Length: 77
Image 1 (cartoon, helix red, strand yellow):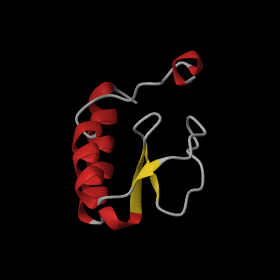
Image 2 (cartoon, rainbow, N blue to C red):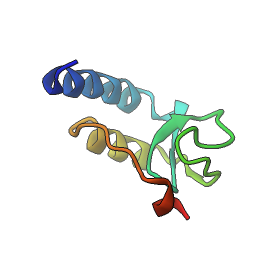
Image 3 (tube, rainbow, N blue to C red):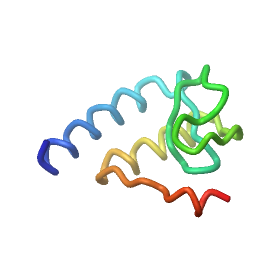
Image 4 (spheres, helix red, strand yellow):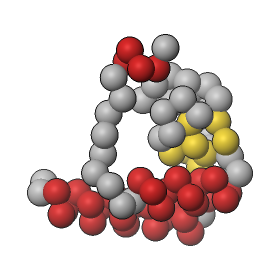
């Protein structure tokens, strides 16, 4: 998948999240967006989340405009 295709896919996913922010929450550890039912973050295994719709929308808009990045495990400690 090219960078343009990846950005387009992320933008579409972000738009879905912005339309229904109540279904998601933002991980306070790595700032990933996860489904509201998640107990821990699948990326960093964090367990603190912000489920405020304004925060979810804001983070979705940020993530929808950039390529995916990974967080090195050492930075999560």
